[in-house]
Structure formats: C-alpha cells, structure tokens
Length: 104
Length: 174
Image (tube, rainbow over the protein chains, first blue to last red):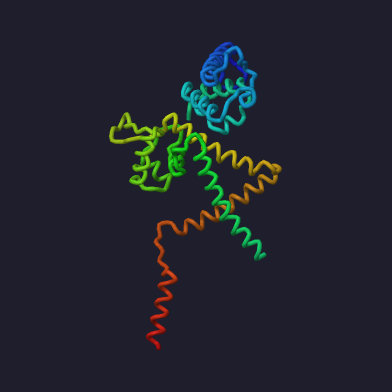
C-alpha cells in the first residue's frame, strides 16, 4: 500500500481510474433503470439533472427506483440519506460510497 | 389558567384524532388502498431489510404471535409479505416484505415524514429545537401515564358498583 492516498481509507485500494470506472458503471445502471421506469431516451439523461425537478418522477416511481438500486447493489438507501441527494451525480456518488463500504 | 388547561386538553384529543384520520385517508386514497392502518404498521414492523421472525415482529408490535399469524396470512395473500424457512434452522420461519410491501411501507413512511416536515417548516432552527424538546417531554409524560396501565387489570370498582353498594348500605341502615 502506498502512502500517497488521498486520506479516505475506504478508497485506499482503488486508483482514481478504478473509481471513475466503477462510477461510470453505476451511472450506466441508473440510466437503464431510469429509461425503463420513466420511458425517457438515454440520450436525454445527464449526470447534472436533478431528481426532483428535471425527472418526471412521482413518489411511487421514485421509491421503485430506490428499491431497484438497493436490490441491484445490495445496499440500503433510507430516506434520511436520500434527503441529501439532488442530482443523478449525487445518486452515483451515494451508491458508490455505500457499495464499497461493507454493510453493517 | 383554567381555560388554557381546557384548550390544551381539547387540542391533544383533536391532534390524536386528526393524525389518525389523515393517516387512514392517506392510505385509502393512495396506491395501497387494500391495506388497513394496522396492516401498514405490521409492514413497518417487519421493515424493508432483513427477514424477521414472527416472535420479534409480534413483540415490536406489542401483540401475540397468534394475532400476528392471522394478519400475516392476509398480507401474504395480498402479496405484501413472504414467509421463508431459515436456511440453517428449518424450524424457524422468517417473514420479509415483497417489493410491493417495501413500496407500501416506504410510501407510508413518507406520509409521516412530510407531515412532520410541514409542522416544523414555519419555525427557525432554535424554535424547532424548542418544539422538539417540548414534544419529547410531552411524549415521555404520556408514555409514563400509559405504562401505569401495563398488564394490570382494573382493580377499581366501577361507579355503578360503588353506587349500588352505597344504596344497599342505606337500605340496611333504614
């Protein structure tokens, strides 16, 4: 293990490139879920879109999306974590952080 | 002072009734209108993540496993709950929420959260903290009042019994 890591112990074993790759993968998965759930074209979706305003989610669809993510990544996304999520990029970061962190 | 006491007494009862009423309506008018409030709370008690045993779930709801069994049968039939045998110990049955069950419980949780958010919204951070600590005290006090009745049958005679006894004594005297 090198000592030049950026301080976050959970990311110690991942190079910046690995992190990027993993996050890209999560973004792709989210894209697939959104396309299926909302009937939108994948080219319309960018990481800076906000969940509440830019995407046409009602609360039921939002929870379907959340439960899909929980099941796909074996993570927990309780409401108090979701409160801080604004954009799709935020979702990607949250899913990434939770999925590299062992549950419980 | 007297009027304030009366007003608080009235408001407490009304708050209780209206929370219950709107909760019931939110379920009836929502996507999960085939669930009762009690069934919704059963889903909440099972929780969206690990499978739970009947005993655990019954005790967190404060009901017997017999009562829970009836309610779980119905929830299984409606497609909100599944029963699975424990992989290691086949004698243990665990219950967990289906996807529909998770959705129902989370949507309902949202109702409570939004209600609370709207109550807190008009206040400053300091006022919110004060309100929270006062509500906490209120909750604790009512909890302590409620716990006095835990598990004890009423030993006090009813007013009618007392009156009947008094009347008998008066008749004996007379």
